[in-house]
Length: 317
Image: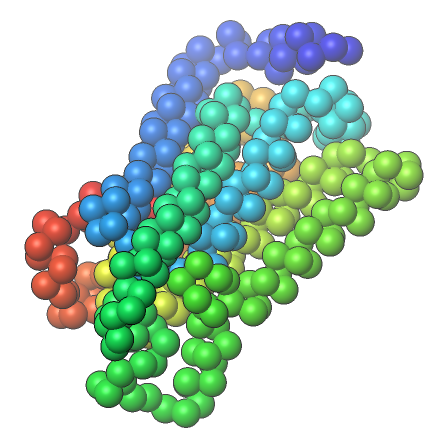
C-alpha cells in the first residue's frame, strides 16, 4: 500500500462525520496557532533584553531534542506505510490519530526551539565580549543563580541540591542534563539497531521516540522552575507564553478525544498516541506551576527591568 492510498484511507471516514470533522479541524488549527505562537514571546524577550540570563540552559537544550522526537513520531506514524500497517495490526485496522496540525506544529516547534538555542549562544558570546576586561561587572541574574554576591544566603542542604542542578555556564547544561541527553541518544540508538536486526518493529522504535518526548517534557521544565525559585523571580522567562501554551494543551487534547471517540469510534486511539496525550497533560501541569510562580509566589519581586521593558514576558511557552 503506497502513501497516497494510506492517506486516502485515513480520511475515508471524515465525510461520514461532517460536524465532528469540522470541530476537529477547528481544534487542530486553534491549537497549532496557540502552541506555535507561544514560542515567540521568548524570542522577542531575548531580543529586547539582548541577553538570555534567567533562561535555563537545560530547558533550552532539552527543548529541541524533545521536538525532534515529536517530529519523528508524528511524521513517521503519518507517512510511513510500514508503521501504519503495524499500527493497524495492533489496533483492529484503525490508523494512528495523527492530524496535519500535529505535523505542522512538531516541525515548526523544532525550528523555533533551535532559533532560541542559537539566541542563547549568540547573546552569551556578546555578553562575554562586552564584559571582558570589566572587573567585577556581571549580570545580576547570573550572580543570583550561582549564589554569588554578598546578599545571597541560604541553607547548606538546599545549596547542595542547587549546585547540582545549576548550569555550569549560561550556555552549558547541568551535569544531570548532560547525562540525560547522552542516555536518550544511547537508548534511541540501541532501539534502532534492534529494529534493523529485525528483533523489534519500526513502530516500536517510534513509540520509544515518543516516550523520549514525554520524558523530556516531564523534566525540561524542572530546571526552569528551580531557576525561578533560586532567583525568586521569573525575569528572563517569557511567562506570557504560558497562557497560549495552556490553551493549546486543552485544544490538542480535545482534538485527540473527539477524533478517536466520535469519528474513528476507537477510544483506545487516545492512549495509542502517548506523545500527544502526555504532552497535553504535562504542559498543562507546568503551565499552572509557572502561573503560580508569576502571579503568586514571586508577584512582589517584580524588578525595575520588568517595568522598563513593559512586561515583554507577558506577551506569551
